[in-house]
Image (cartoon, rainbow, N blue to C red; front, side):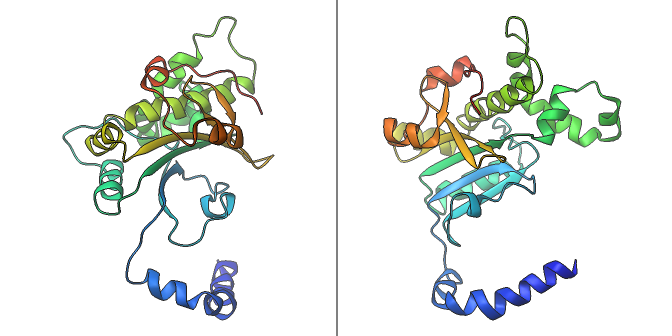
Length: 231
């Protein structure tokens, strides 16, 4: 804990003074470029990975970067998505999974007795079960760690599908004011793979040049099928 306190002291003494003008502006309003939905995993640091400044990203995190389908009930994900679009005017929503995801490990081994001690986690992972079902349909199956890598990708595709069920997102997509993006971050290499409109994953730089950041086509998401992972 002391390390965190010391870090804050360094921030106040060294970092804040150099960016004080920017922080004074941010103290009054925010105008993020994108909403970034990702896992709560401590190894995933969106601002570091994207070299973003304070105020650039509206970040929402949970176990497994899950976006529950829209219902008429209320939940944190729905509220954050609605606020990002309606109040902040966010035009891009990124769902970013990552390699070695603990939530996806739990989903892959859903019968593991260890999950019995985590009933809330087990229930939460049901929102990603379609990804596990799709991963299990590959002829011949997968050999570890390919199964986990593939599940991480399928989960991103599944959550993009769920994202489309939210009214604010659906309206934004229909009017061309919102784009959605699916990424997978690989911790060991620092690289990001992005899903394209065919449902395949390729390096982010290639996808960005090819489609100028456009949303994956509905057909690709409806199929819930992504190519085998390329690390």
